[in-house]
Length: 294
Image: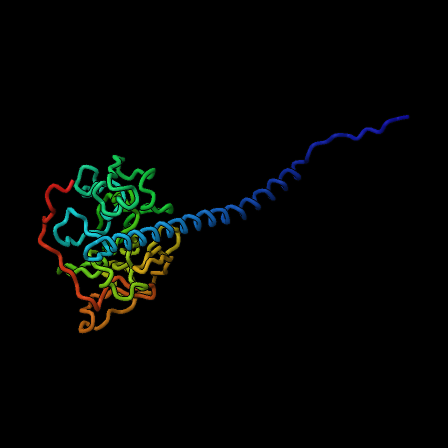
């Protein structure tokens, strides 16, 4: 009996090209979805870290004799208008946040809640292997290079965590005449409307105070947040909830009449940064850092 033999043959060039084209199309469809899923996971992790900061602020407030929500570093004997980074985290490249400066990790108020009272880990500035509760896992870039907005070179288009030891800025809204209207140094009992008042935020959310198209003093325009979305930023509110908020064009309200809030209200559809109608705090004299605070 004769056996029929099936001839073996390879794929033709056209068939190979068709298969490669199908694979390329599938990859082009899947990659954006995978990238979006990764970005969304990073955003949610960032929000979780912010909520943890809110819980720590409440714990600090419960322990503090004055019930302060936004801690004043013990190296300050007055309200210095700072407070936006030295509440917790690690060393940074900006000089005041350096390891050998009096704002090292072992002196930052929140660190004892996360790492214990003896926390004094000597890490390199901006070491992302440590202090991760204060780290945003997204594209943590500091101040955006923007016309009319000045910033420290170490924090300009560089990771804010690397510059200051934390990705998140405390709301220390202050003015050139010394008035402090944010949550820095303020007791919980003196924060009206806690569900709308911003406590901590991505740094560029604060930068929009100058770039917003309603009354910003720098060139108007929308900034990009840590999570790739133009005009959207992660915010933590004084009542403990966190959300991704639109702070882009058209979201800022006009200033209230000077007779009402002295023209120092910062508000929008996303909430507010000022704590009015409660009274302001004022900056103390310069160079009032307390001695022996290492």
